[in-house]
Amino acid sequence: GAVVSQHPSRVICKSGTSVKIECRSLDFQATTMFWYRQFPKQSLMLMATSNEGSKATYEQGVEKDKFLINHASLTLSTLTVTSAHPEDSSFYICSAASTGGRETQYFGPGTRLLVL
Amino acid sequence: GQNIDQPTEMTATEGAIVQINCTYQTSGFNGLFWYQQHAGEAPTFLSYNVLDGLEEKGRFSSFLSRSKGYSYLLLKELQMKDSASYLCAVRDQDRDDKIIFGKGTRLHILP
Image 1: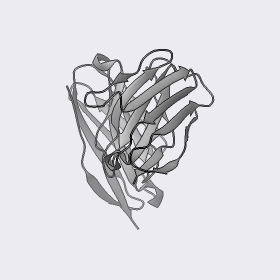
Image 2: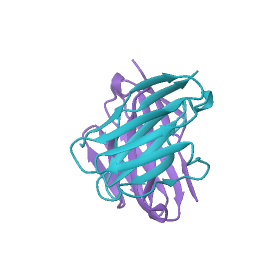
Image 3: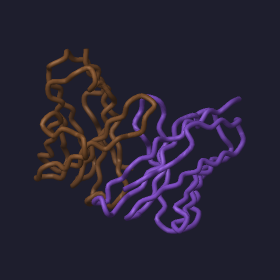
Image 4: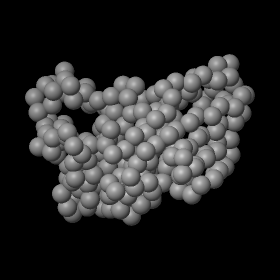
């Protein structure tokens, strides 16, 4: 399967700071990338869909001004958690699809965020 | 709307067979996925069904009945490493083909 990387794998930050998470498709061009959040023992919750060169589409209840998504190229999408709070502590996972999401998605290894 | 149901937890014995069921309700069904997720890791793809019937891949098989809104994942010759969560996910063409996940089934394998 295709390879998707995420960086960093783990981050600890102070409340009020911003954190940027990168998602890269290493061996294919991802026209669409998805960002998920997963709390302990819960399922993956889709936060937003990002398409290369256009604005991200956010799911209901997800604050677009708090979770900034940039899909600047066909291999890179970034999620910035702005003014992080302890309740933002979670496991953030990106996935990438090659043709508008019509094929299966390939997941990155995830980023564990802890906000103190 | 969309609703995906699967059991929260299951327990099985090493070497045995286990079937994990998933029922779904969606307005624009366009495929069903099964993923495996070990604790603290991202999901890995197991199977994809879009037509009725059984798809077999080694020790894992997945079945789909679109008319019943039902799927199952069958794991044979269970190994300890199969202890994980198994996520049923449905792609919805009425939601731009996004893949929406169920809450997952935590499978415990006993020696």
